[in-house]
Each structure stands twice: as C-alpha cells, then as structure tokens.
Amino acid sequence: MDANTDATRTDATRQRVADSALDLIFRDARTYYGWLPKPVGEADLRALYEIAKLPPTSSNICPQRIVFVVSPEAKEQLRPCLKPGNVDKTMAAPVTAVLGIDTAFYEHLETLAPHAVDRRETYIADPDLAWRAAFRNATLQGAYLLLAARALGLDCGPMSGFLHDAVDETFFPGGRVKSNFLVNIGYGDPASLRPRAARFDFDDVCRIL
Ligand SMILES: Cc1cc2nc3c(=O)[nH]c(=O)nc-3n(C[C@H](O)[C@H](O)[C@H](O)COP(=O)(O)O)c2cc1C
Image (cartoon, rainbow, N blue to C red):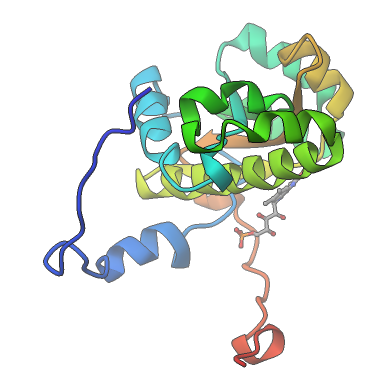
C-alpha cells in the first residue's frame, strides 16, 4: 500500500523533462484504433499501475478500480458490451482496461486519508457529493493512466462507447463499482491513425486575469 518514495525535490532534480519525453507523451502520442501483434504482459501492467497510482486525487481518495481484460475468454465477455464501432479495435488490442469508480471509496479513508477520516460520514450523508468526488477523481486517474502508459512507451485508445450496465454486471458485480471508461492498451499500428484533429489555441479558451 505504501507510495514508493518520499523523495524531496531539489533544484538538481526539478528539471524539465527532455523534449523527446514530451514528444512521446504528448506531441507524437495519438489515439490508436489498431494494434501491432506485440503482447503486453502482467509485468508491464504492474509497472504501469505503479506510475499511474501516484498523481493526486482529492484527500487521496483513489476511487479508481481497474480490470485489465487480457484473455480471449474475458475479451469475449466484453464483446457484447461494446458499441459496434468499438468491437474490432477492442478485440485486437492486447489489453483493454475497464476503468471503474468505487462509489464507496470513503470506506478506505482510514488507510488512504487518515487526516480526512471524518469525511466518511459526510459522504454517506450526501451521496451526490460522494458521487461527484468519486467521478471527478476516478476520471483524473483515468487520464493519469493514459499518460503513464504513454510514458512507458505504450499506446492507448480510450473509449466511452459501451453499455455501462452490461460492463458493470460483467466486470464489477455487486453494484458498488460503476464503469467510467475503457482504454485499449498496446503498441499502436500507425496504419490505424486518423489525421490529428485541431485543438483550440491558447487565446481561444484561456484567459489570464
Ligand atoms: C473518454 C474518451 C472516450 C472516447 N470514446 C471513444 C469511443 O468510444 N470510440 C472511439 O473510436 N474513440 C473514442 N475516443 C477517442 C477520441 O476521439 C480521441 O482520443 C480524440 O479524438 C483525440 O485523438 P488523438 O489522440 O489521435 O489526437 C475517446 C476518447 C476519450 C478520451
């Protein structure tokens, strides 16, 4: 359960990452719809989680739960849950991460957030507040997972085109964990790329006050 370092930043360690790292994680990274026939093993998934678990969530609530769908049998369980346009790419991906949200994340406050343990009753009394905290922070953790995968040289294809009830029933039985989105993970086939769509420029969407 321990977070793995208590490193203190110094001017020597607080350096901008190399441009090649920014290329890998942001500039050249794309959303992939097809996959090279190169496997992603359990060690890769464990290494991915070790990185992705570290960025922040509010009060460190860590509400994300993940099922890594790898085996052909598990892939077949996922197939009927997918919107038609997402079936082929998902069946071909070495791994599909089913990202879930623990709606009762507050049951772990004693371990994860001893400083905020009294928030448990607040969350129980206000399910809407609890859901918003869970959804916000689990979604952040989904983004961290995407960027961590890219940083480790993997490619991703996130998807929201699936039947939530079916995924929940199949991969998160019991009702406590709700699906958020899916992420295909592997080594992307460049032939599957679509042209990069535009992004807003700074002045279109940002203001400095
Ligand atoms: C949360 C989320 C859900 C998405 N859902 C789907 C989907 O269901 N099917 C699909 O083909 N692409 C899906 N996408 C892919 C996006 O369209 C793609 O990431 C975006 O256009 C940026 O593409 P780029 O990374 O190649 O620039 C989704 C992306 C995200 C982040």
